[in-house]
Length: 205
Image: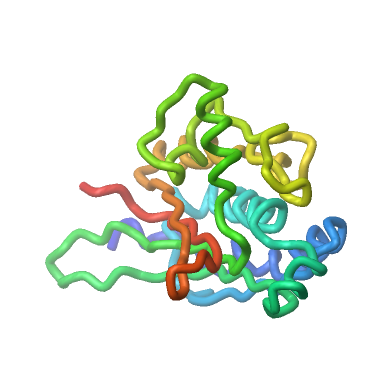
């Protein structure tokens, strides 16, 4: 209950991206729509203070190297515009349980992670992350110059769209300071990659 004092609705951090993301995408020869779900879910102050910046980076990230250019989506028969969903869910807990906070999901229907580029980037940085998903958050790993598709942006590259603001490793670092964490999953439809989901949730206590 104490943590809900001073909380702000999720929509305050998310709704500006409904207008911003399509403008970013247009500069990349892409089209996207952003949907916000759970806009009234209360966000505790410690998360609300950083959530706008976190969401902005994650959506830029999705536009820059998750969503395909228009011609590519047309060739693949994928819908245009691409879809990015910002979802807030309040965990349902027993009355006696301690409230830990909401879970935030950023979901796109793009092409998934660039496995080859991340594997090469980890090798170049002499790192051995546990998984490709973890490599996306690892400090010191950049896919600049390693992308397997020239139309992709590069993770942590300050010259591309996703480079403005925090890198993915910095996103995770900031979240961990306040008791949250971020993880990334590839979504699959009948075994075929159908996009990326980044999940921001409270760490286990």
